[in-house]
Length: 343
Image 1 (cartoon, rainbow, N blue to C red):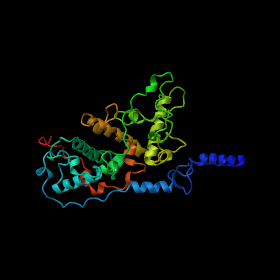
Image 2 (image 1 turned 135 degrees about the vertical axis):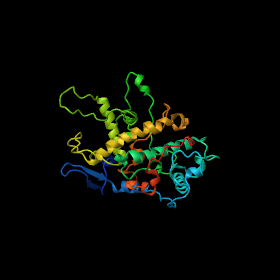
Image 3 (image 1 turned 30 degrees about the vertical axis):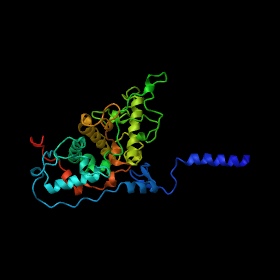
């Protein structure tokens, strides 16, 4: 009996040892310079699930060209005021498909008078439309011509699956043991690492802290970044890795993480992405604090904001790079400002 228990214990220990390892088959893709170990490791089983979750919906039929302007029929059109009636209606139907929860329709944003702004959902949707057009026009350095639509983040839900808000102070900070700064409490926000689990408030909201923490000189005492800031930076990097379903070598050459000329082109794309997220959080989402109800805000009163996972949702390009924007050129331009009557 004792020998049998021992064998079971050994087998159990071996199971624990390999539980963190990927079982075959595994796909290896060389992503960077030869001989530098810049390979991406993919699990076909995981990839199959991600493929099923990242299918773009079929586009609504294209509208006929020409026709009366939407502003000649509808009142209080502040964002899509450069579209025809047919184009406008097609975008509205598509938004219902992209954002509105199952079982609801136009009345999710509109109640009675279509031109009224009584429903906060409509006010928020208008601001998000401005944001989508702004991103597609001003952040091509990150989204290129693939662009974004409402579906990129929402995936037929009223709230995207991956959002964040400012965390209240750690109650442990006032105790004798000190403030653990969100560490040693593995969270999905940092890839289940025991790193500070809120790197977003510091790096992804407005005029955030510089992410770089590696000193550019070899002299002691010259690195302005503290160990604490370095841990927060690593937390952000773990978030980006998990959000895109890649490892560090997707952007960095591990022989020299700081070297731009040895990094992959994706590092520059990610650099712009960080700044794009800061931009939209500061100028399009934070200003909605006075519009949103309490259940759409964090405990400190700030709106739910976006990070890398909001769009990417586990894949290196949202929807594996499928462009919905090509079917919706109406969202590819910023359009004219709202008229005084609409305002």
